[in-house]
Length: 251
Image 1 (cartoon, rainbow, N blue to C red):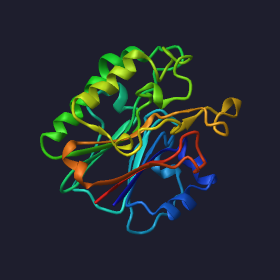
Image 2 (cartoon, one colour):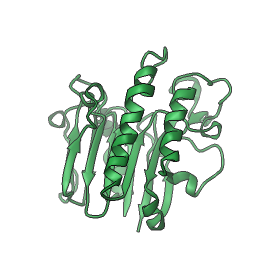
Image 3 (cartoon, rainbow, N blue to C red):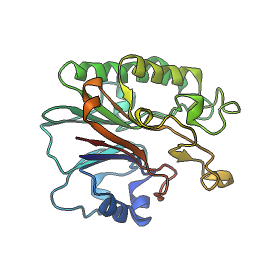
């Protein structure tokens, strides 16, 4: 079973840039999207008939939001994690399946001036981890999405010049460390320990062509799912957003 996650930076813009061609070619069983920037009724999207659509749009128009398109019908669907400031921005959708939960997340950006770093550090990151652990008491968890942090120095091209910048502050990295220390596995690093693997590139300075990027999009899993994890991948060749898709294959 293939699950793919992609921050599309606007679903309507992505559709104009070949989103449906990507969908047909990649053939995911489940596709999780972040930063959709639209309501479902604003989007003309013809998916194969077996796919069900689950949307969690932000109250603010043209901002944030998440969606999941799934070939497998879930037992339950939950939007949000109980943090009002994030939940009104449509940042999390959870699908419950028979043997695991799938959590799609678009973590708040700390912003260039770090004005939202305190919210990330003190409220969002602890609440998100608490939510994952609560789910895990019932069954294993898969979480995916744009976590808006490069975990280690290997996860961005220029770690030293970006130290203390949004996405690579000590506080944000500690938040991700806490997830790992709680037992969740960074699936990509289960297969690929090497550098130069990124999922986001600035639109400025021709960064993508030069592969001056950051790895800020992830799939994490509960340890109980590790035997079923057959592959984890990044698709930097896929265009249409400043992020590229990431994915996993579960047995």
